[in-house]
Amino acid sequence: MSDPLKLKTGLRVNDQFNDILLELESWYRSDRGQYLLGQLRSTLRPHLENAFGYHILQIGPVREHTLFGDCRIHHRVQASESAGAGVGLVCETGEIPLESDSVDVVIAHHSLEFVDNPHQALREIQRVLTPQGQLLVIGFNPLSLRGLATAVRGLSERSSWRHHQPVSTRRLTDWLHLLGCELQDSHYLYALPALGSGRLRRGMETVDGWAARHNLPVGGAYVLRAIKTVVAQNRPRSRLRRHGEKLIDLAVPKPAIAPNPAPRAPGRSAGVAARDHNGEIVH
Image (cartoon, rainbow, N blue to C red):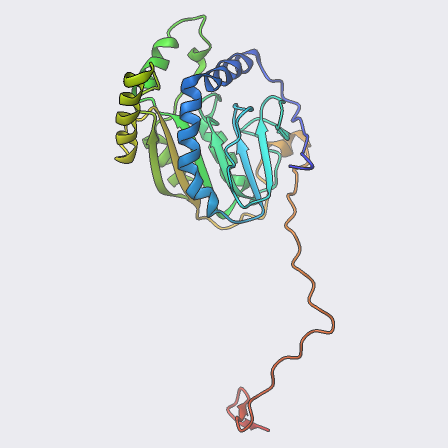
């Protein structure tokens, strides 16, 4: 973005979020995290290359890694609860300060797993999405080896992962249906972590690739793609209105001005008679 939007909602980012933010970003910088990022970008590429519209939003706690790829939508907004390089909008996922029906594509990257009310967060994401807009939800799958390992880590009182609340794909699908979003497809990735080196590493990647191609629901991460099917509301529903905050209106470019003088409209072909609404011939 050449002209980033900077807005703070006035809500304090708590220490719990800062701890999990650092843990999550540290994990994504690791070898395993980079491996998953590569899989996510490959999975998102065909959806984003075919996306159209004026505005695309990525929202979630991961600030250092964007997933826009080669999307043809030029106005890109990255939002997070904490400021950082590339973050143009600082806000909570449950209170997005954008007008309703204004964003054509939303990438929700771990947006539902680290909030107190994930259903409210998803409702807010759905609100800002345009009718027929595309929603791409990325999360950790609790029914996987990765999910089991995270649950075990969360048993420790000193671990930041104790605040992690994963949302299963089944639960997420039900929420999407209730919010008027039609599930298009789902992808499961990262069935096996990238471990070791040499022959062991190549063998694990081969098995992981096979599981991804067959879309086995045991992947450590998922990508759900949905389309918003409800019509435009034409009214903001964000709780920010209660705080007196003004929602940001993402303007749509105006159509090109017709040339002046405008080209003359083609006339009737010779020998062809026109009829008025009563069926009488008009000369």
